[in-house]
Amino acid sequence: MAKILIIGCGKIGYDLAIKLTHDGHAVTGLKRMPPEAEGFGIDFIRADIAVATDVAKLDVDFDFVYFIVSPDKRDEVSYARVYETGLMLLLSHFRQAKSHALWIFVSSTSVYGQTQGEWVDEDSETLPKTATAQLLLKAEQAVKVMNPANIIVRFSGIYGPGREYLLRQAMQRPVLQKTPPSYTNRIHQLDCVGILAFLLQQSLQGVQLESCYLANDDRPAPLWDVVSWLAEYLACPTPVEKALSHDSEQNKRCRNARIKRLGYRFFHPDYQSGYSEMIQLLNWP
Image 1 (cartoon, rainbow, N blue to C red):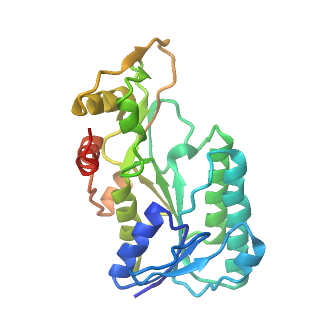
Image 2: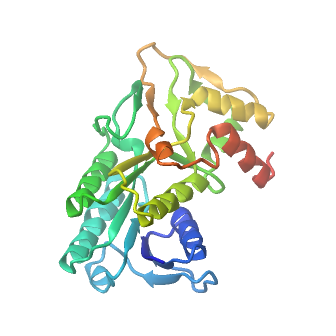
């Protein structure tokens, strides 16, 4: 049994906490507004990581720490609050207390700056173009400076119940780029939880882990193809092609070979598997 702290208990963090508790671990969840009643054996701490007095009160007697915090908004101020102020307060607190906990830090594939359909993996150059992605990359580096054994997990676009943006877009006959293709990289939230739990299991079994894992399903695909498939599945009109020049940006394509070599098997290896189950669960249309 391991003592585990999950910093950030949104959908993924909360589901991970339930799974790890079920697996026999002692799990503490840190959240600004924790649930008032809980029946899964999870202990909750009410704290704001961007408030120094809250962080100073935290116990550090943990074997593993997951950092799965989502900013309130997708803007530079919100990201700085989490990945500069909050994270740095936490790292300083754990460092001063001489904690030996292994951190698993959730990041994003937005730290890559490739835009011409290139394939990227954990060893590809990171040249983030946006201020928010730059903050994420600096946060990754700070986590690694604290302890080179700490692990970075870069999630691509997460979808699942509650994350239905593409489904709603497909129902509205959007205008989308078709030629050249603009690629989308996706992972179902079941696999987000699965990969995070799998890495813990591997570490506890003494497996030597890499410093970074890219978490993406097997099949990056043109956004046009994904939304067209969804529209057909939902019996909605096909998207409208946007007129573009042939040198338009195409995003990147993310490889998942490293996590699969480690032995992880995806619940949903492609968007068709994940979205078809999701649509059935939601009882759409």
